[in-house]
Length: 103
Ligand code: SF4
Image (cartoon, rainbow, N blue to C red; front, top):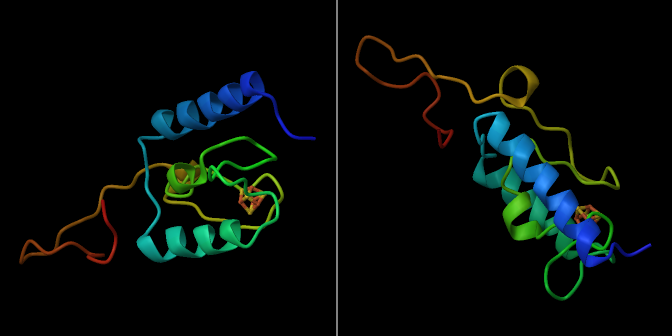
């Protein structure tokens, strides 16, 4: 059933609160692109880019490491324990131990 405006706002508020609570961890670009490719081929994606299941605006929510597809179509993704943002260690030259992430 398509969520009404109040349900959409509630779902997006809950997803936003979880994202903020966990330190706003983003997903790497390749994960974001894969998620959006799945959403854009999903029959539940509306013309305004909101999901007809959760009601969230997917171009925004797809970039959040704490977010999930309510239909289970995305691969599981976690940054650190419980989806938390991780602090990367630097080596003796001051380089990050994982320069491919965007934190
Ligand atoms: S979040 Fe899941 S159900 Fe919603 S549009 Fe994307 S793939 Fe479809």
